[in-house]
Length: 193
Image 1: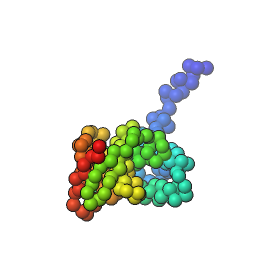
Image 2: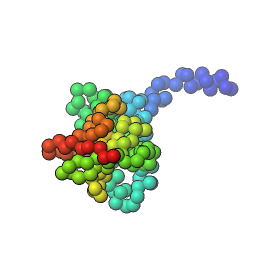
Image 3: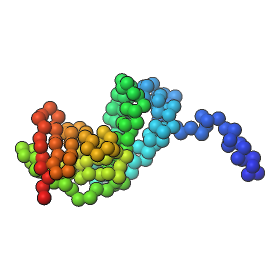
Image 4: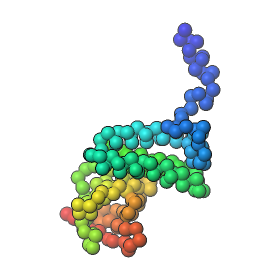
């Protein structure tokens, strides 16, 4: 009986064994969606993102945080689908998934950060930065004073990569950081002792 099952599995077409994304591929119209439907690795990342989103939603600290999380998740496919205009469709899509998964790893509590690093950023005030390195891509959680925390994801896992957030870009060389608020001049921040 065992031999028959092994033979049966080996004869199944690859399409039956292929990973499927969380969305209905029959309704996929965007180039990126169609790519995810054909690409096992991207389909698996799609499911990883869904699982992390559910985990983050369950662990959100209150209704306002859950609403913000849901809003970000609803907006995310549009960001992912913008990769349809990229010269390297797969690389862009892969990065979009890895960046969103990294954010959700932080929001779900899957990733942990050591103590915050504090920087004196002059006119911007004191920046508190938590660096998360156990994520799909490195993440920095950046906040000024008691302001809202912003997640910024590194463009690559390479040391010295820029962390891109919705309102700021952060570059860190150890003793200091360069914070670039959108539409404003760069600010050099000195690490506090």
